[in-house]
Amino acid sequence: MFSNHYHFVAHSQFDQPAADSLRAMLGKLHGKTAVWVNRLDQAGRRKVWHNYRETRLTFEKSYRARLNYTHQNAVKHGLVPVANQYPWCSAAWFERTASPAQVRTTYSFKTDHLEIYDEYTPSPDW
Image (cartoon, rainbow, N blue to C red; front, side, top):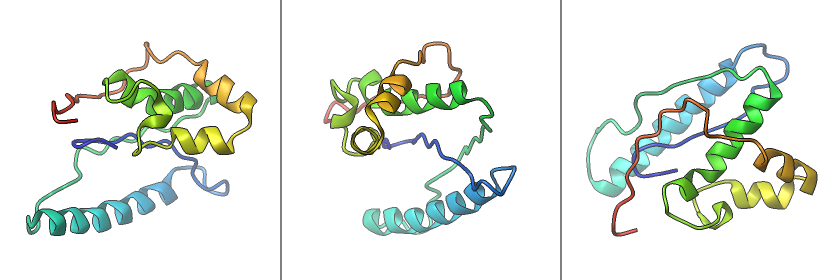
């Protein structure tokens, strides 16, 4: 999670061939967090989340590479030296709950050839 975007990698329900359940869940998440953020900023009905992109991952290698990218994103942008130190990322949770083999495997996937839109410049105040 960053000030202007976030990356989210998830599994849809096993009994659904498409990501329909995720789309509904993200719609609720965006609605509730937009109201909350606007209340914090006293910004009325400002549009908070936009430019939603969805990619259906059908290969385990694609899933693992994007999960690694998502976890390493704060490191890429220079916010922390190690992914699990960024408080708004699931890397620390993943490292605690996944098996050591799953963590090693996921973190071994290269991310430099992924085509993921990620325009973000950290604030100097960080």
